[in-house]
Length: 537
Ligand code: FES
Image 1 (cartoon, rainbow, N blue to C red):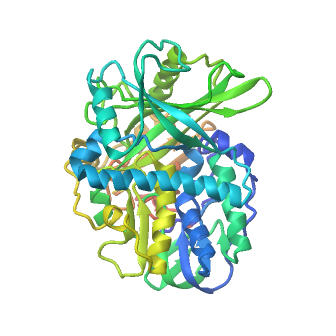
Image 2 (image 1 turned 60 degrees about the vertical axis):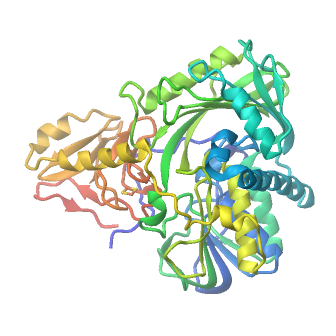
Image 3 (image 1 turned 30 degrees about the vertical axis):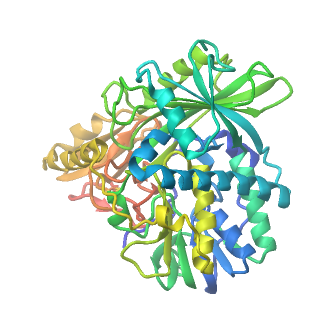
């Protein structure tokens, strides 16, 4: 069976872009790899904020828990976020009121408020030094958006229970002549320091954490790891950003997006500590306008670090050809320099956002599965609060405690995608498969891939993804996603094979980086034999 076992990559240049947050944590995992069979009350798969929050809440409530993570704690999307903790929901209150009505919008708002309060309280109780702070957030109109967007949002957010202000100018920004909305009591922290603080508390509470431990099989009895170890559990929680245990259902209800981040120093105290968000560039994409989000982090005695993110697009699919992945960083830099006195860029990274079609996370029992299997997914760009809500809600569900959020976040709610992004991505994945023509000249095909490039090639009738590393070594993988078989797209900025259907991503040597795929791409050797020979694991 082709698996997702870690591969000894020959690709020296492949290293997932590291975020600023990664620098503050141990480079080698302080947690062991699982090497025995276990029995427990709850097994949690995924060591990001959703999984770790769930493990913390359940172990605090007295449950025996085991958490497994196939990389290191926070090495997935939690380590690639910008960590805004907000009630200024980025899908906008106007949208929520239209879709869910006033009462449920209030409930949604209360859940995000409760999540921020929970983080604040936990930081104090567990004495976690993660620079948590409350601060205001400012929402301003992108010039391509409707004139009324802010007043409409003011009305809808006020009705939902928030106390906002309309300001004439945008505090802290250059070119600040526009009005903006001020959202009070937002928050920020260092996500990985918070996560590691929670892990310490989990261990103190008797919980067990294993890293570099891949759950190859997940079912209602527990998990079996890649190395064959079994964890039996009464309840199973899958918190893997995109649920790797679900083949179809949830993936018809959400779309994956790439989002980009740059960071660099600004003179200390030249910009006030706050959060900023614009309403997105409607000229680039009317359906999902790429927006921008900015925050600061204390850096050193002379500087603060300005962290600017945005320029999102559907994973594996770009709305315009001249806006490819690499140009997103350039566009983000130009936008940031127009608005903030950024000196230089010292960090850049990108992350994945799972966007549910109705903008609300899926938290609860996994649809069409046994009653004891739970999922947390669909961060919707407000991952810090959605993941924390996930931990609180799943804990209540497993402990048998009524929770008013259960109904609104229930994963089985009827919300199937009819969005233009869904259909574009579907067509893109199919088109790639249909354009394959067998029998092309392998020598010619491979010669066309320059060092540092990745391309789709036809080799001996196989549709392959070929990456020529900077040292001239060819890495040849199947270009068919191991989730449901869509045609993969080469992402030159991240040096990865990305799937337009549900957002799975693979390293150049085929190792899975993002689910829902849970298996590596077949890796081929280039020998004289035809067809290509598959490399053993
Ligand atoms: Fe579903 Fe690729 S992620 S087919």
